[in-house]
Length: 145
Image (cartoon, rainbow, N blue to C red; front, side, top):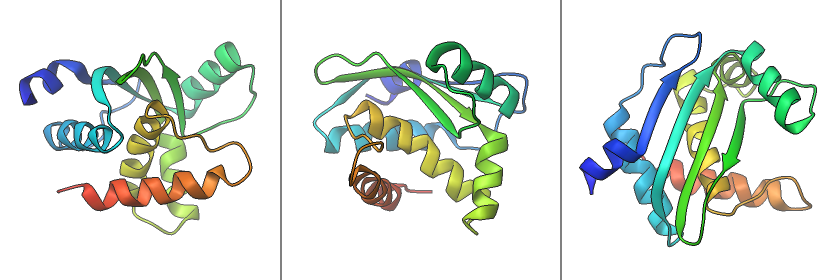
């Protein structure tokens, strides 16, 4: 299973330094969180980038003209989750300062936020933000650093 996750969950840095994360721990965690929703991991690519790249992706694909911490492209089918997750490390840092949390904690929250979207949890409709935050908190409690 672990070797499979090594192949399926990949990390890229786009014009920015790769964040200091334990990729093996993150892969296992993502797989464990997905399993709690009855899902298995297909190909998932994390693309860490800067604010300029995320706003470019946001404009090009979503016609949104604003910065965001994560954009999730969902290719999931049935119980197999799959997607490309663009994460702006600039926005993660800004959010960590605004939320008065550590950069590492905020980065982990955003990393799992995208997976929760792939598992079917939304955060745009009425009451959905609270559901997402509760799911993030449960997932973060599962992270074994």
